[in-house]
Length: 275
Image 1 (tube, helix red, strand yellow):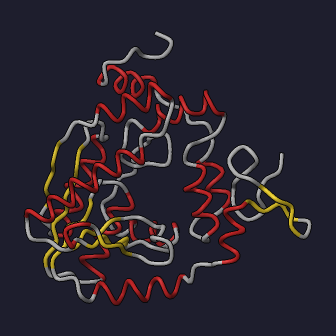
Image 2 (cartoon, rainbow, N blue to C red; image 1 turned 180 degrees about the vertical axis):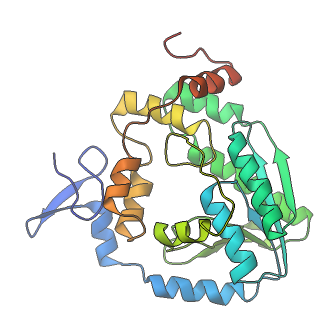
Image 3 (cartoon, rainbow, N blue to C red; image 1 turned 90 degrees about the vertical axis):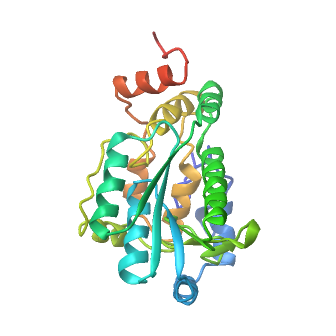
């Protein structure tokens, strides 16, 4: 089976051509024709952050949103910040604990909003699909409406991948979403986490906050034989934001603790697999 020489795609997850004797996936071919200028992205971030006077941080309690909160407060010195966490019903208690503790440590107001995303998670598990896109879309819409109600024009998020070649996008209602970690390597993020009272929860999958991701990955693996995180993690490797070795570990078949699996399925009113 061919494996891309630049990222972690293989023939199960992407079309791969052999070019000058090297297997290269179609996504990497596009990147090679139109590479992202990381320095230009960071310069754009600096420019827009100079304009930000009030903002909410999309704050999941996971490692990336924690780094975004730290940067907004300590590096970019945003005068007025609010950390807004949406608990979709299956957030790990450790993530909520991290969120509260670090917001308090940084002296930033913390708001916890609770919603029920059972419909999204139930459908994903029943169909052995990823819940992430639908979950993220709903969360961003709720945060956009919260920003509008409370007079904010900016939402800061902890995404490492920019919007194409730019670190921000305009949402409806005149809200600007800023991906504050755009083109920041994993090593850079971990260095910041060392400065904070962040406790890493032991959760399966590439997550430090969500309980449903592991069981969803488990079912997807059983059906397809690979991770639905493959494309996103391949992009991190392609952009030089994660090492290939780390990526391959993150893409391994997850080992989900039985108590986590039971908690997720029972909360969603589904039969636990194998029971």
